[in-house]
Image 1: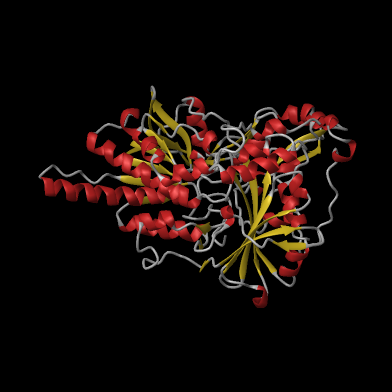
Image 2: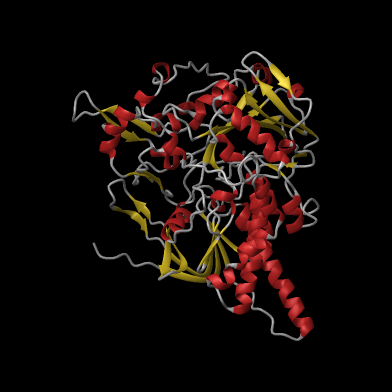
Length: 564
């Protein structure tokens, strides 16, 4: 087959991903260029030519793939746009009732004092999908081009320099043949490429591996399950934000929940589960469903209507899992740069701030016409002098405490972290890749080796297959699966024997299924329901053999989180 001819285009600055970090960065960049030119004019210097800025987004529309428990610390958005409220920021409510609750199977105990990390009073409750739509509008008013439906699949390099990205081909059937609708991907070349793809971004993963940008610790992750329900009006409480844990389960796995009220009698419920589990049957979806059977949740959701479902991983490693933030011609922002405070389960404000710091660094690069690490390295210096770094520093050993060993040590270390501004018992605790925690079935107690038999009632609790229908996910069936399994024979043999095919458990969207092998009676083979994928990235992270790779599907495909 002859090599595909591809069109190319050149821009000054390319942003990959239309999330809060990149959109804030693009907006701030243009404002900073204006400020630079005002100063230059006053000082009689040459003004800077306004850069050509392009944002590409794999979703069909801005905000379609944005899933978040959006209780937003306004510190960053206020720095970005001081009159953000007057400009129409899509706040639904402002938190005035932050709570922490100890949940049990038969009891609910509200803490008399909300822990400081969950004190959200004054934070803005909003749909992250609506937030990025609003930010996108602000960007477009400044002349920034945003192209949704463009999935970047490859980093383009010249030696050690990143020169842009290649977008994915479209119109290929499941056997790899070109359909009549075939369209080759495009090469987009830029002086600086900013990767803000979100958690476990496919290009960020390529970049970090290729240029050895890993931090002192590997990254750790959790899977977040999110549901939107419309509750009875008398159970709706605007301004309420709840965090909590399930006891005694919290002593076995450090999972947690959130809940907040939105407009139109909607409530957002989320449950966050450790991926680093010894048990191959660890199932974030099942844990979220079981949590809804607690007295508090059962009462809240009595007579309620399920509106939406989704799942997303979050980076949990914190400061010591942060990769190098820059390369020759590229910057990392947002979740891909580990910009999430796992202690308070909050990252949108940090994403926005780091996007702003990246923009200020790019202005320096434009003024010097130098896009190498010499100038782009200033991003790290700006970050280390910011409140975002200070916040990360105060939470630096939180995730490490989960792995510290005996439960009583974790119980001692976590309060000490609050008292010692992040240090705790030891200055730098280690974390490990989540898949390394998984034990083989024969290493577990006999009662833990089988998958739990749980009966979903279809009113409060639902199967994965049912819930996928509430994610709005859509993928064309006749295309190569975007979930790549390097060796499916491992799934049918070694993984089945050693771990019992954990992909059937850890995937929250029923993508992976072991089915009867018609060519080998008495054996199973892996079937991938790629059309179910909600782009959470859990499989890419949790697979014990690390043979599953998540790649972007055709541009525009995936979940629809516009109501989330």
